[in-house]
Length: 209
Image (cartoon, rainbow, N blue to C red; front, side):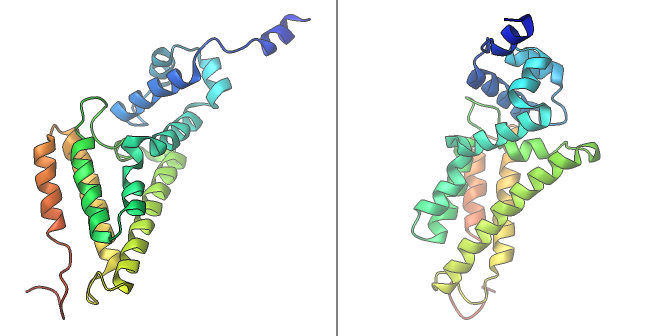
């Protein structure tokens, strides 16, 4: 067998899951743009060629990191709350209250990975910017659908605007992530969550005066 054939058949000498976890932490801490290939290969314990062979490059690696994060307990809590809670209010209350504990948790970098990664993406990385924007818009659409259903079911009053309310909660969640990055603890974030929930539209003929 040729040396080239032996090289092609040789198994990887690194643990892919461990390498992916190391990349996740770097992207979570520094965002997409500020994380260099050198930092990635050093943290992952692999050579640049192995990174490209196993993950397809920085962009493909980042997308895989984001998708894996979305399936993890710290990334999936929003979708789980929307799916499991019987009312929209209970779902959004759970989302905000869990965000208040998850985002400042010292066992991982502060905030939300996908929100943090979007803060420093430049025009040179239009593909990544569009990827993250599409994720945010997809989440916003899920919020809107849940709130429209709540209105149809009579949980939200007729005067409520599901589109605006979805945008409001999305903005609060993004803000809580940034506050966690700035050092806010779970108590401060819990207070923000309760204030945000106080804006939930009340039942009645019109908005509260």
